[in-house]
Image (cartoon, rainbow, N blue to C red):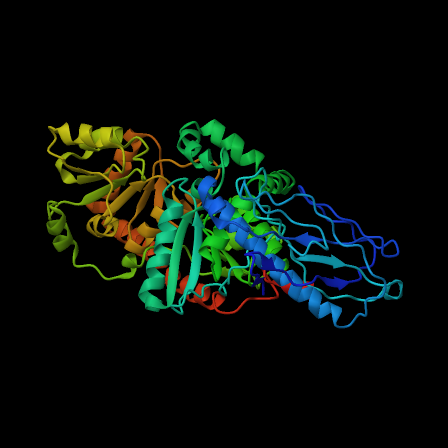
Length: 575
């Protein structure tokens, strides 16, 4: 400890001296330098100055919080280094005396700056390291730390030579509440990824109460630097220009393309992803997006191997039904949850083992597993005519597709035999146009915007018209609805079409006039038996329990690291 002298200066303890074998290099920085002539052994010097006149600091220097944090880390690092060197010195006897570490920079009382003084001045602590010739080849365990002087108003900078913050870091997930923390990574490229993340969060809350803290983060948009943070914004443009989306999807499909690309991306966004992991401090990381495997896994493995993080598990929850991009699958995950046999085979083809692949189904919001009142009561609650069959038209979160043309054709073909409920999502123009229309045929049309009770509208419907999005298909299956697919996003949703058609739970048609004719056939009394069987097959394919099974498995993964698979395995390899 530094003691005060009568003249106001601080009494500084003598330096700690140890010998250090080559090939250690001399460490110097800024305005301090040093040398050693102890038998040709290089030396390491660490110096820190103190302020004789504290008022000179506050008079002309306004500290910045970021610099103060760096300075604090320097002091803690230097202290840790001295303690480690002292422990190492206990097993070695110093032999030849060493020249002291010389430091330039003199005390400037008028400017309020005290620099690092050279050895023998008695004004600053200093540390020189070295080992005798006989110590060559011996194992040496020692701590190290460093810091530079904290300047005042003089031309000097506070530089942290200790690279890591030594603030007491709690074990992963330990925020004092005893909760385990699960980080779910998604990106707003379409509504399906966020819907899956919300479904997992709701199921966690329902099954495990307050034992888990669930965080949902858009990692691309909120935790990467430009231009990467702007990539999700291009999704709507690309899917509306199908050739561009097809080209980007196909080009990135081969491993020899997307693996090098994502490794290169790691150089630009890896640090930001690592900072996010530090901020959220998760016990488990879950990805529900195909572009959130490779870079986060690389960051996690590196940080766990370097002991900057506790070993944790990483899980992927695939939210595509059949046609899955290869970026969904990474052999470095702990578990990969897939909805169908087709996805399981894709996972195996991409190097995942049977132990890593788990098949439960698609995670759909728990509310779909709850029983609903009879159809007439739901219709009355929603303000719909109770005795008229209802067809639900869904355009996704953006209200995409030829919804208006389809409603017009339905009105001309079916007239008052059916009512249409149109979910316009965020497409306000479509909503306003449909609200202003009146159909002479007498067909009742109920347009609504973005809704949170889609399960009630599905419970009131007799059939659904939608694009081939996996989430809406899975919800319609749970509701037991015949499905009429009217479009798809190229590549990633193409495989969902044969899934619906081959399982005899619906049809595929993009032309509004023919869609109206198919509905006319389905709702004809002569087709009633086949229509009922179609609805029963749809109900049988639904997996309302899938989200609960996935959550139970994820809860287990948050408890204990798996050292066989996933990022935690690097810690076992390191030992």
